[in-house]
Image 1 (cartoon, rainbow, N blue to C red):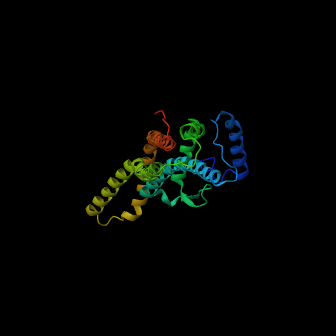
Image 2 (spheres, helix red, strand yellow):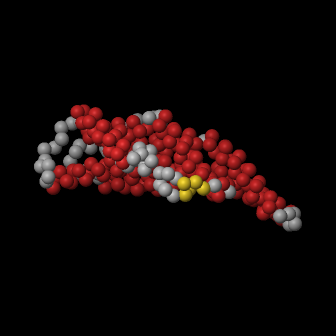
Image 3 (tube, rainbow, N blue to C red):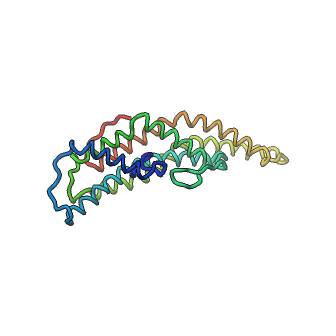
Length: 237
C-alpha cells in the first residue's frame, strides 16, 4: 500500500488489497512461528501497529528514492526555462514540470527492469526473521535513519541537476557579457529561445548520467531499508 508504483493511486485499492492478500498467502508458510498472544488483546493491537509501521517505513523509503529523481528533473526544468511545460501527475493529482515526470518514467522503467519491487518484497519477508514479530517494532535509531535519508533526497536531487545548473549559469553569464558589449541588443527577444535550445541540449547530456545517479540513490535506499529492519544487504544495484 505504501511502496512506490504499486501503492500509487493509479492502481485501484481493490487490486492492491488482492495483491497484498496474495503475497500473504504465498509468504505465510515460510514465516517463523508467531508469538502466542490474545487476538483481541492490547498486545495484539500493539503488534499490528508495529508491523504496519515497518511496512510503511520501507515503502516510504522507496517513494523518497523516486522523489529524488523528480526533484532533480524539476530543478533542471526550472533552470533551463523548460518549467513552463506543465502536465498533470496522475499519481499525486497535482501539476508538475514535464521534465520531472520524464525522469520519473525513466526511474520507473529502471526500477521494474532490475526487479526492485521483488527486492522490496524480499526485504519485507526477511524482516520477519531479522526483526521478529513483537511489541518492540521499529527502534528510535531506525526512525532517525529515515529522517536522515529524507534530507539526503534533496541533496542527491541537486547533485543530479548540478551539472545542468552550472552550464546554464555560464550561458546566463555569457548573455550578461553580451548585453554589456551590445547594449542596443534586445536580450529578452533572443535570450529565451537560445536558453531553451541550450536547455534541451543540456537535458540530453544530463540523461546520460541519470542511470548512475539513480543507481547510487537506489543502493542507499536499499541499505536504509535493510538497516531499519535489522538485516544485512548486499551492495548490488
